[in-house]
Image (cartoon, rainbow, N blue to C red; front, side, top):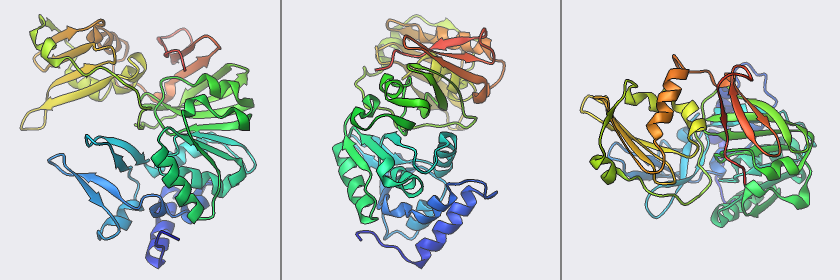
Amino acid sequence: MTWLDNDTAAALRREFAAALDSARTSAWTDAFAAVPRHAFVPTYYNQDRAGTWQRIGPENPRYLKSVYSDHALTTQLDQQGFPTSSSSEPSVMLAMLEALDAHPGDTVLELGTGTGYNAALLCHRLGEANITTIDIDPALTSAAAQRLADLDLHPFITTGDGARGWKDRAPYQRFLATAALRAIPTAFLEQAAPGAIIVAPIGYGILRVTVTAPGHGTGWFLPIPAHFMPRRTMSAPPAFDQAREAEPTQTKTPPGDILDRLRFPLSLALPGHTTCSWRGEDGEVTAVGIWTEDGSTTTAHASGAVRQVGPRRLWDTIEDLAETFDGEPRRQDFHVNITPSRQTVWYQTPDGPWWELPQPS
């Protein structure tokens, strides 16, 4: 073993699993109690108030308690100091596993191996021979494979674009994505067994889809919010310098709305967008910025001044959403319909407001 397990860790793990499922209704509780999360998170990074990342390892007295808490933990940074991998919030992991409705013997394709912890949970309950897990990062798959092997777990693990699935081991009864997607991958629909279930983060929500026929599916979003690491893509940086020179218009929509009540529907209406905010000494939002991969950039000030540049006027979409929703909409009121040619999300009723998801890869 290359990881340390002891009575303290085991006790914390049992308490951790019991707290995740206080009603003791989940079939996954035993997996969380049995699989040592610290074997898959030997170190993590914590960001201080100054924005500096600090490495936390077993030598730190708060390490084990942090690992066995219901918090997402950043596990990898790129050369610029941006997070590129994490161990997801365990309660969200449990909700996704519950939504998967998998049973021992079901075959599962996991997109986003990450640390390998989720794959270990799947192996524990469903059997290692039934698990296929893929990640784009060879460093992650190599480390995850070693950690899994240290626990005598040997799922099929490979490096590649998980959105393309893995045809050689299809069909799959279940698909689980642990990286943010913009639509359900075509390969999932093509490699699905009849009645397969797909659970995947879309925008700032988690979508559960049942495959109803080849290339077709229906589903809805879970009620819980979620934010997962996106698939790695190239995009244009925000054009804030150009936006400062743009002629302002006025808005009645508070800039902070895109950070809270409109955050989820905006992630569907503008897939892959990025936001930032500026705050005063009192912590109140004074301005926000939003941009998309094509270089479209918008800034909105608390005064109501909006400046937009690029091929798309992003704040126009935000104004439309502000008129559509009086308050913060419930995620479970958003449904999806999938055909071979398009994927659409509709709100509350099929003839209500709707948005088309990007054409999947």
